[in-house]
Length: 307
Image 1 (cartoon, rainbow, N blue to C red):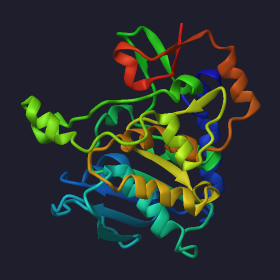
Image 2: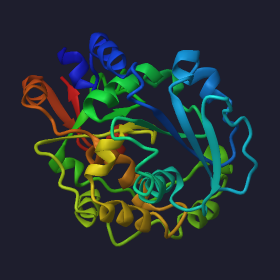
Image 3: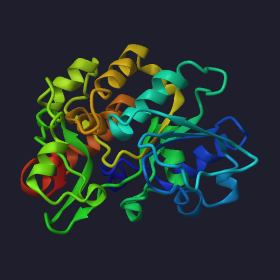
Image 4: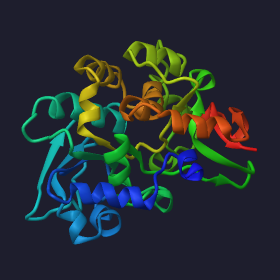
């Protein structure tokens, strides 16, 4: 299925087979939720809606980071929900890295290698583009990693965007600042400047940050997941050394709004997915494509697009 491979997907048949394999109770589901100020009702109302899927959940860890009460936390007699408090640094990427470094590695009895962990936020932004809970489950079970948000046909650019990026251009990604206008109601240049006082770091390009983590990006193409919502197999988490995860946590702990968070968002797939097969690499290579890194796609530097 070349069209599915292009966007990092698998067939419905493969998804069903993966779910069937796990139906004997081998694969538990764990949720890690990064919470700031939004209610969490959407998790069971919109994302994990069926009883069968909810029954797969073993644990939910909610990391509250902004000092606000947790509203709408999923509850059930079938799973354990725990709320922890973390410092308001590094946003969702820090939450995920903290959980991996401090919980997944330290509790080997509760988290089995075949288990699937969903890393999600306290909001359902762009939910219309999310893969379903079951599609993410199957994809993570097979590939070790599943991105929630799928690449789409960009009508303004006029090309079908891919899950894959040209690694050489991807390494060049950089961003000078970031603001959260919707949440923080930014109205002045002074406020923008205040939010970005600690944004810059010694790593001015994504490639330099990947090198610091000891992460070797695949060549010539790298998978990239945008949006900070994904699932991963525990076995893939444990394939990376504890030192790598400790470095990630440490680098994301220096501030709330920081460039390392943008690098981390783009590197989760490379950290967790299984290596590209020759078949997938061949499909990517055979497509008529271009590499984009300017204008509306400057924040997606290196992304492949159909021509």
